[in-house]
Every structure is written in C-alpha cells, then in structure tokens.
Picture (tube, helix red, strand yellow):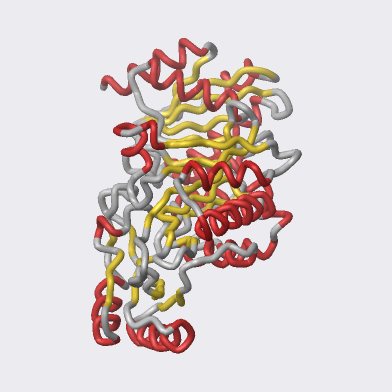
Amino acid sequence: MNLHEYQGKDILSSFGVRIQRGIVAKNANEAVAAAKQLTAETGTSWYVIKAQVHAGGRGKGGGVKLAKSLKEVEEISGKIIGMQLITPQTSAEGKKVHQVLIAEDVYYPGASETKEFYVSVLLNRGTGRNMIMYSTEGGMDIETVAEETPHLIFTEEIDPAVGILPFQARRVAFNLGLEGNAFKEMTKFITNLYTAYDKSDASLFEINPVLKTSDDKIIAVDAKVTIDDNALYRHKDYLDLRDLREENAIEVEAGALGLNYVDLDGNVGCMVNGAGLAMATMDLIKQAGGEPANFLDVGGTADAARVEAAFRIILKDPGVKAILINIFGGIVRCDRVAQGVIDAYRNMGNITVPIIVRLQGTNADIAKKLLDDSGLDVLSATEFQEAADKVQAVLAN
C-alpha cells in the first residue's frame, strides 16, 4: 500500500525522525490558512507547495513550487489542485491532484552549506536481509546516479534478527562525508529511519532528498513509503491512510470482489486459478505472440458467479482482443467451471472477443463436452500447446 508524502512523514516523525513540517490543504483557502499556521509555528516566510499523488518526479511535472508570499501560496495552490499531473512515473494521462502539502522552507541561509543526500531502506531479496541504500547525490533520480556514477551508491545490509547496530549507522554517516554535529545527527537519523521501516512493516522507505541544513540538522524533505499489504492486519490504523483515488480503479473493484487482479498493458485477458499457473499462462501468451492484459487468479472457488465477475473485470479493458481461461481442476471440478463459463457468457450477452478455455483435472472430459455442445463461440483446448496455438490463431485474424 503506497502512502502520500505527508502520511509517510507522519510515520517517520512518530519514530523520532526529523521531518520538513507541513500541513495538507484541499483548496486554495486551506492552503493560505496552512501557510499562516506554519509561519506561527516555525517562523518560515517561504513555503514549498507539493502535489500529493502516488508518483515520483513531481517537480518535473510542475507539481512542486516555491511560494514567497501568502498571495503566491493561494495562486500556486489553486493551479496545482485539480491539475492532471504528468511525471515520469505516471501514465500519459497523468494523475489528478486532489490535495497539496504546504511545507516549511528548510533551505535557510547559515554559516555552512546545505547538502542533499539519498537514503532508502528496502529488502534485498537476494540475501534475505534489509538494506540501507544511500548516496551523496541526493535530489537526483537514483537510477541516473546508478547508471552514470555507480561508485557514489553505498549499501549497508542489516540482519533483521539483530536490527541496525551503532557502528552501521556511523558507517553510513562516514561514507556520506559528514563530521561533527552533522555526523551525530545522521547516525540518529539512520537509526530512527530503520526503526520506522522495521516497526511499520514497510517494504520501502525512500527519502530523497535527506537534507543537511546550514546549521547541521538532518531532515527528511521527502518521503516515499510503501507498507506491506500482508502486514496490515497488524496496523489497522494504517488502513485509513489508503487513498483509493490513487489506485487502479479496476484493481480496486477486483479486490472488492475477492479476485487477485493486476492490470497490464497487453491484448490477451487471463483467467486462471493459482498464481504459479497464472505466471505460466502469461508466458504461454507471450510465446504465442500476444501480450498479457492482466494477471487474474480466481482462486479455488471458480463457480459461475466468480467466473462471471472475472469476465466483467477483464472486459473493462478495451485493449483485450481475446480471453484465455486456464483452469486446473483440483479442488474445483472442471465441469462446474465450464458451466460457469457458459452461464456467464449467456448472462452477459455482450462478449464479442474470442474465448479459449483450457480445463484439466477433475471431470475435464465432461467440461470439454459441455463447452463443445454449448453452441457458444468458445474454443476449448486440452493441452497447453493447443491453447497457445488457438491464442495465436485468434490474434492473427
């Protein structure tokens, strides 16, 4: 589950991480009120206005602006709220901005220079350990840094059974070239950041940039946070942070129906039971010259109602040119699935794309006969290769 910047910062602050303070506003009037409140609390006279969407690169799309007066706060907020923000991480149509974060200006002058760093905490799946990835090149796309100057990216692996040790936090601060009070501040920052990641059951905490201010404070200026969905039962309060407006509408609808669905960009819809078989089916489609339009696992209860719901979800994608149903009847009987397909086809009455059905397992022979005798435009298959050939044939027409 992805969080907005302000939500991620709230979690960070609760674990003792120093953040750039800000207040969320849903319209220009609220933005001005938020700016006045920030001035009273922090003394700031300049304000950073940030679009709150689940996408990086907001500044490149015009979603992050500096306001030097309350009048500019009102004008800029009014323009950003309601805009379709297009960034390198959104689709071509962008995302609509529903709210902005009015944040304090932390780039204030002082005796020494400010410096931006990159810091993230994530799981290294190759080693089974958590990893702190960090760089002196903050404020830039980490992908660009990795490509052009890979020697400036450092990693620190943490044993999840032990947690972060003091010498590891000190090593991060040392590699970032810090000394004095900034060194102490960074070690504290890294320790608390890792604790926030661990205790919140996150899969990602990315802070870009982490700012060393002119008076040697270490501040999280941004926060990209992803919480592990599988751990949400331990954090019921986090469920209130979910913003469905930022998620794929079809995926949200499928989730409400109990279907495991991921929207993709292909032309062949998939309906499968079991994640492993679903992945193999997607490979099958690729080998047949098509592209999977989705990942859809209907689970072990593929009855008529569930099959019909899956059909409706798949057909919401206008790019679907064919549907491949690939079911292994272990717990579920193939004849029941076949009857579900027939019932769904007749109930919906508006299916115009070819449907290939491969059923194997319990009562597969009965299922094939039901489909062949149904009189519907459904192509049945028995073997994997046969299904692939039929997918290839319908795409060629």
